[in-house]
Image (cartoon, rainbow, N blue to C red; front, side, top):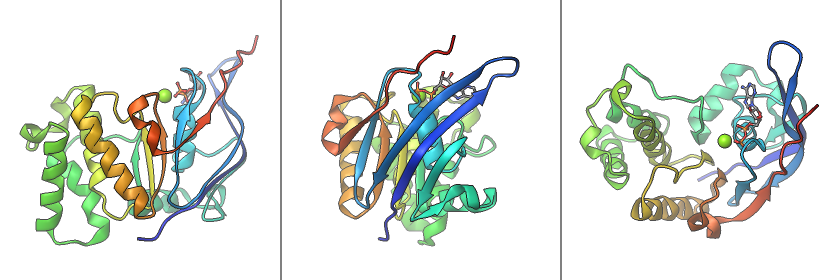
Length: 225
Ligand code: ADP
Ligand code: MG
């Protein structure tokens, strides 16, 4: 498998909330995620963890600074190129990157199989295996519109972990809706991907994920007065 190197160079991201105030969601953040490395993104609620993950997969662009994938700044890529890179090279589970609501659970998970061109039999088997492992096999043919938030997150996770060739894995709180044995399955799968050369950014406070990699700690957000 090929692998990706991700770099944040002095990245800040702010949001205009309409009228007067601007929220500085992420401030002057720099790090390098080497090939095969996992960083656990930690920090209090509101510190910018989810914002950092959206920047990492090119769903958001920085206000200042650069996010580079294999040395190329996302800011120079067209939106369609970033979407293509996400589809072909990444496994992403973040808020705001949702499931396709007109499809079933199984169809959504099978979307992950398209880039690698594997036979549909192998992809279906892999998709089913992940639905089993995450405890949602009985929902395979359900329309995703009917699912609860926790079930949707598990479908998104099954989709991410079914993508066999993803070079960069970006997960926001992956164990939030999983019990112990299912969390173990996710950790084992991530371990396997990392050993095969993938890189991962995982926002989590779950100590069961501690061994996956080093911590990247975001400070509490300063509230502008
Ligand atoms: P965390 O995931 O660490 O809880 P977030 O990245 O979700 O933090 O949010 C950091 C800050 O940025 C919060 O104050 C949040 O309200 C704000 N924020 C995040 N996304 C947006 C957005 N799309 N529009 C406005 N404010 C946002
Ligand atoms: Mg968050």
